Amino acid sequence: MLTQQYQDNIDTLLKKIQEAEAIVVGGAAGMSEAIGHSFYHTDENFLKHFGKFADKYGIKNLFEGFYYRFSTREERWAFLATEIKFLHDAEAGRPYLDLLQLLQGKNYFIVTTNQDAQFSKTFPDDKISPIQGDMRYFQCGSRCHDQVYFNKEQVENMYENIDGTRIPTELIPLCPKCGQEMEPWVRSYVFLEGSSYRNELRKYNEFLIKNKDKKILFLELGVGTMTPMFIKEPFWNMTYKWPDAYYITINPKDALLPRELKDKGLAIHENIAVVLQDALNKKEKRDVDG
Ligand SMILES: [Zn+2]
Image 1 (cartoon, helix red, strand yellow):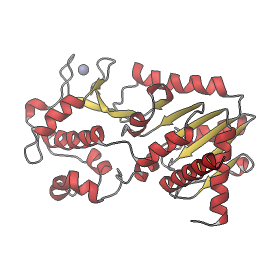
Image 2 (image 1 turned 90 degrees about the horizontal axis):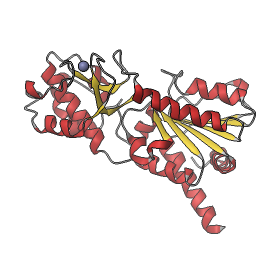
Image 3 (image 1 turned 60 degrees about the horizontal axis):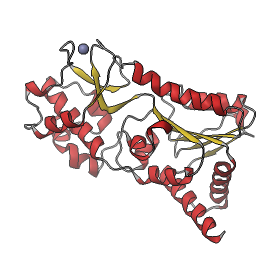
């Protein structure tokens, strides 16, 4: 980790952040993994909160649980209530706080496909756009009307009334307008792309338009290869087209720099949490040393 190449990468990252007149951060699943509780792996934390679902259904992670075909709605909602309560309760992870420090005083905006609200817990609303929804909100499963509902209290109540791996039927969340079942407001085949969704896109686009001719840094954190169309490909395209843009991707697995961007970008194949922490330590040391 302490190779010269690694140190050079940290220096470039700090220099590009410092020089940038605008920074667009794209955060995806790799950021969630970096905080140690992941959607995609069975770990101690998963078993602590979801052990009974792991035992009974063989569910190995949050991702599997979300798509698991429970045989009853009461069991599905018991799992969802447990998951959503866990996301409400989780504190902002260290990589998010480190990123906040690194961006301090800069003109920046964050776009994220994550639905776990970690960015929302760390950054002000006007500086972030969750474009794939947010588990902390419900929508009508039939999309009968354009509204999303903050679900903390309802989820707490569902969670407290879980019996084994079921919630009571009367606690299944229903749409106040049409009576159909609610759904978490996240990307799915019923995802509500209504006013809340459009508002998130609007904030992001306004930032891009306002800053496109400036010295702009695209900083991609943990975007995988499964859904490149939301963050990765737009970042590549904008970096390629805009005169003073630069692209940095940090990802232990999927950091990829297209040949067309070899003079306008950098791929750092390292653990995101470690890179952010090392960068912040170096920055703070420099600030102290003057
Ligand atoms: Zn409805």
